[in-house]
Image (cartoon, rainbow, N blue to C red):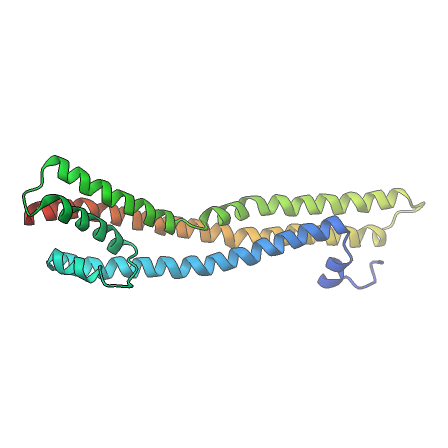
Length: 223
């Protein structure tokens, strides 16, 4: 390929060496899955935030805990977020307190039941975040590997010619740099999304923990 030939993006991609094309394919697949998980996390975190806000509104308004529990016990309903944590705590409260004042052992039993539900909900919120973190941290290096390989092949090809010119080395360097560009294209959105989602998960986790403590105090007062 001469410097006056076709140096469009697609021609450089399809004209690259096999290892560089494999690197590009890996990075493109990583980017596709990143955007898929970004879309999933946007929906799931929005649902969790809306769920928490809606449930807190009724809880802090002084609604009866038994009514809230019945609303979370409807057949076929899957509780998530605060509803799942509340359901686990009140179910343990019902089975252990028998309407009497809570003792220290009863409070610990409720806290353990809610902690199990809390861990399950936080684990669900953090799903796919490790993948985004891995793509964000590894993709630039994968792209750099493709770049190094492409440039190395270009200079090896020059060593076999009697006269080296810019027209001979430019296409190889250009196709190699595309690998780095694709790596950055995959990494930057993944890093931004990971940081944003991780911050949202931390805020929701704090809300869940605060609710757990307030719930135990609440049932202690009402019992």
